[in-house]
Length: 376
Image (cartoon, rainbow, N blue to C red; front, side, top):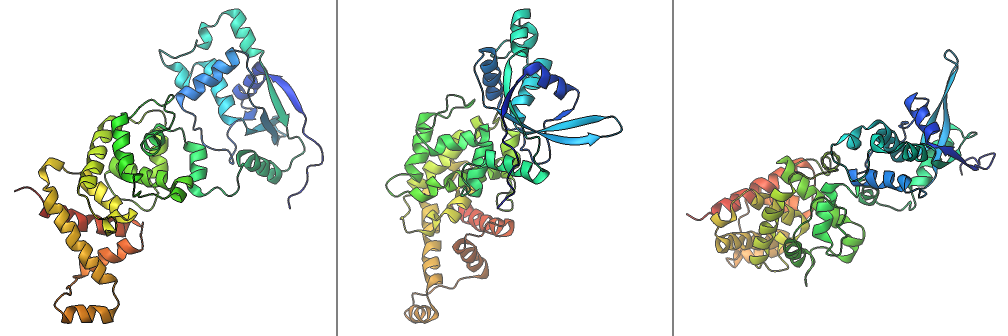
């Protein structure tokens, strides 16, 4: 159990101008090493500043003592919770970051009247000062403030931090027909959302209720999008966060990806593969989607592709049999000769290996199947 704080932490009101002067002089560190990245979208920054302009309250900020510099006789402080709010306030006053744009949805600070500026600068922020907390206690307080559920899995923690990124919102729109996209820059067409959901969440869904409740479906789609955008396979989920951050305010490739991804899903659905097929397990479906995305689907003979996929499926069922059954089927003339490449594909598919090497091997295997189905 952690050490108890010696004293309670009362809340005090501090004017924005006082906090701003500390930020400007760098006596208040808004980004200590334990803080999260700045992940607010543009619209959130505008709405937050609008909250202050309307004189509405917002949640309190936590500050802790920092380093004492005996040479300059200065004591720095650090923000424990409130990084994004204070950064937005500083940027708004100085007209930097998103507030430097020519057109924004609120008045710029330099456009406010003297009375409005005074009201903004005199706005009182509720601040709790952790004056007697140790470094370890400060970090733990930060973790406790920002974690309401210690059982969150990795993707859920990721969503808590990056859930409003335009990259993530693109995936969320595909996955949830009731998703509120009113604050999302790019809005997918209802028809395309319906097409995607018909396949993944229809009568025989790809994702179970458990998958959805734990957001593994979101993780799956983010990896699909990251692979399409990066045009290469990567190790596990390594490239996802980088793209989520890069496309936080604007997913510039959304308009290009939406119709092609929808067409690929429709194409696979219309192949009418049996539910029991290995091609509808999440691993092989992932590879099939990525590889089909690369092609003009009008140049692929759907019937020929279906036959090729089912042929592989039959070999897979044979692959799964124990040796005794294989010997019996071979003796009856119903066995298969499975080459090393196909055998490796089956192994990589069966255990859902998400390392880069197996992903590339599966992709090369599927690519060859697709190319056999090109319309001559």
